Length: 247
Image 1 (cartoon, rainbow, N blue to C red):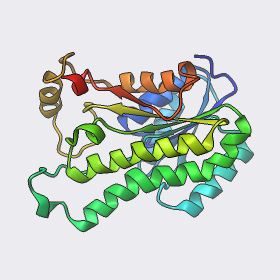
Image 2 (image 1 turned 60 degrees about the vertical axis):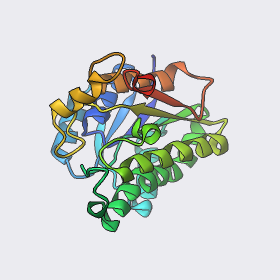
Image 3 (image 1 turned 30 degrees about the vertical axis):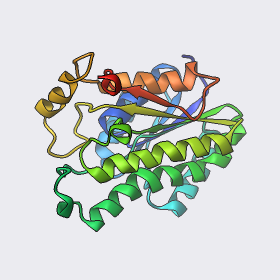
Image 4 (image 1 turned 180 degrees about the horizontal axis):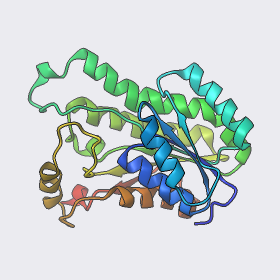
């Protein structure tokens, strides 16, 4: 998994999956841009603790397309390239599926903006720079909820299904210079979902064949596989779900 002289950009890198992915990419030799929305201190600490050198924490406002184009130009100027883009930023809230009234128009719009429009805007902004690499990879972090229709709320699963389909389309139009892969975890015991407890995650995990909670690092390992090992694959979803889809 040698990524020496490569540059990786991660959105949502101050979160559990994003930070675990940053560590894996840095260990493989990449210079990592630790992207964040509001958690500047956390991102700075993560960037400073990464192995290797040349890492940097940077704000990445995924809902501001103009700012993203400026960011891509800045990274090209400062780093010279972008070989890996991991779209790990996302948003959701715990809403019982039966409570249709609680899933407001405003919340639906916010979820789809963060989980669909944001990743697309990142790809749109960075694709020209990544094509110059000639062998670049985009990995979108999705969710098994896209397939099972479960998850924190109905709109969240639907937004991740949209992300999966969008990734297929992007794989088709961005090749051969850029591969596009999706990593789809089951519930991971991180702070991503406000109000979700460890007990809730363990209950979900108990229903799977492997009967254990998926870790953030296991998701990061799947990202690494997509980047460094599955070099003839594009447009596919990699489940990291403890076997939930067959359970």
